[in-house]
Image (cartoon, rainbow over all chains, first blue to last red; front, top):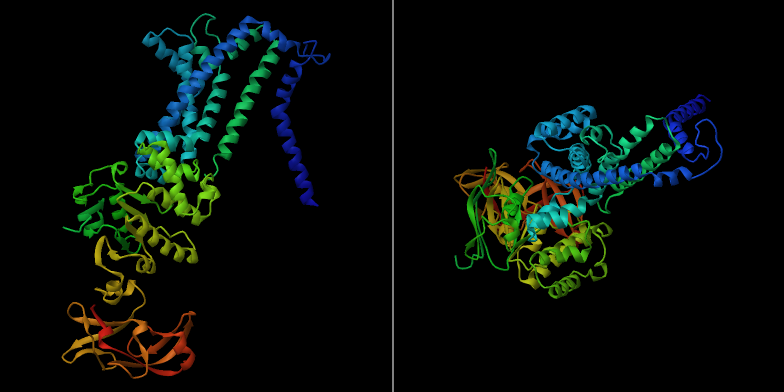
Length: 263
Length: 350
């Protein structure tokens, strides 16, 4: 019965790994519903900490900023990343070299990218604020969108592009009516991924937000609050941020797998 | 020049150092069903793609109704291509696929609707108008691809291996269907195929391509009955080849007998050729050979005898009609005599 025992052992290891991954998150989510607010004792279920969030102007302001940054950086990086992916796939002459250049921002440590962007903005004398965070987020999101769309392009049937031209379609019409609709699941998946990354990005936003509280984002707000200890409000806020990310990520995965019928 | 509708003039295509298409000149008539026939790598698809505008010409010109189209991009040529892979738009319905080309021409909505409905009627797929391509069978996809190209009423319709992906029975149905549609629409068809039977059945004229060049151009009868080269003879249909040496008395076979031939191609004849259906049992023609039946292949319509003879290394194949086979019943191992006429005998150089 060695097989059965091996199987049990594997199940056990799997359980331990998942516990390791998800117990902290479960604790966080659990405590956000703890009425007493103390991490040491469970005193009953309550959603009052979520209510408290809505009355905290600092948090609402930060949430608004995060939304602005996430929406605009997603929009820009999705458009640019998709065009980049299509362009690279059509002219694949520079192959490996070009690929490395495009995907570097995905691998370069955030802290390095953050310092680099800060240095560049300072050098150019740009006044920093939400717009610089947006530009900075586009820098790394571009690579992610491009990667997702390129993966889809690997199985793309280029003969439909020729068919469109043959039937009288201009380059623009072909892009608008054939290439983009067929790639749409991957484009949306890339956009959702970009949105998720932007929502909880801290380091780069922290460096490129400029001085003052006017362009503070949610992760920055949480960081500021946590200096006075973990409050139940932070648990509630973190739970909300995580929910947004999980939903976006799940949607992205789903779209990227299923795709259009006939693909 | 009077009846040249589409003129291909000394067209070349080189990919690096490879000459994919090598000095092809061809005049195609209006409303003609023309087949480019060749093995893979013969340059036939490259030539077709140049006509569609997907490959630039390395040299030469393409003239349609007196005007050069060689420099026009694909979307501005009055020519449509039916792709081998069909290349249907996966995100559009059948009706949307067909309407696409008309929308690109900015035709009025009402006219697009009528023309799409008409062509759906012609290809008998009206009931599938709202389906997506992945909900169609191979044969249905093929018809949609055809309709999408035909609905634009191009001056020339190019078809790249149009029946390649269909099974045998559907293929022979579609051969006749394509012919009917070509006749009905009055559009010049140029079809690329590697299937010699397909070319013989469908085309008004056939061009055999080899190594980027044209080997022979003619009607199916011309090409079948009077192949100009040994390659053409071998490529189209079945042909028996008997090595001969050219001497003072004529063409001498391996057993010393003289083979009489009316169709001598080139000089220094080295091989005689005759089609299986021109061989008859018994000593009834100008040329004869004796051999042993080593195999019989029953095809329903006919019976093919494989006869081993001293005249050639490969067995000679003789075709007998079912009726003849019933009465004569040739058996394996039987010694037989086959004969044929000089008018059916071809001679090719080595």
